[in-house]
Image (cartoon, rainbow, N blue to C red; front, side, top):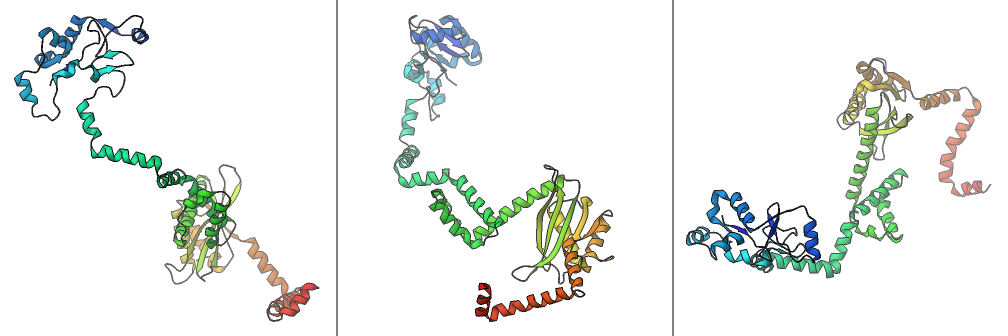
Length: 387
């Protein structure tokens, strides 16, 4: 295609760095002092023409530049060239070669094909069309709205404080769970935070019961992942299991895990998981508990070969010699140690001792009768409290 090489400002001499041409001006000019300090080579007009001819030797007849057109007195394109580019939407115009406003760089005092300052080489017609386009007008309107609209300012602040608001909300939920406070207190607690000059908490809009439940589950999943990661780095770990009934009277298997923390080298006990025993079974027998335990280990990506101990309440379903949970776990890992929980053993020992110690029997009888007495005789209870 046609190639444009612009002229220098004084039409006397050019400098080149890569492929642009510069013109030296008055020696007293500060701009020209900056130009002369650059490591550029100086060539005359003949050298510039030679450089252009060598660069475009394959199609030199179609090259238009200030230097070549000045010698040939070329002021326009020939008919063949005009016909060739007539189908193009953005056509080359010969007048651009001598138009200083298109390629003049004020900082370097340069007129050339390439300049140091970005955005100098442009076509005025294209800029005018862009300025009058609908997209440009819409962009200007959006910018003006952003600068003046209080609603947009509020939206911008909400976006800026988004991360801090979510962090405070999750920290609040974690603290309530850690202190074992009711879940329905979360909304009122967030309102209190707003009153304590944490006004950005008003941007937290997820205050439904479903949203809080998802946040609790997300926190639980994250904490469980951290615990499982530490256990995977430990050489050995032990499980502590017991069956309990929750507030909805569902049988749950609670599992704690004990391991040597690889960071502190101290024995650490953390909560691992809670599962419904009757979700996929009709009874909480040894096989059901063993299946649930295996699932808990698989979900946490823990190796069974690292299971060194198993602690339980000592019930036959847990410690049975042949079909107990401990026996089934030992079939997968022979060195496993079965531990009868010391707290449960103490409770059994105290129960057996009561039958032979009359003093304990008397105290047990008094305490058993005190419960119904305090519920039915409130006035006598108040008198007793005064005493």
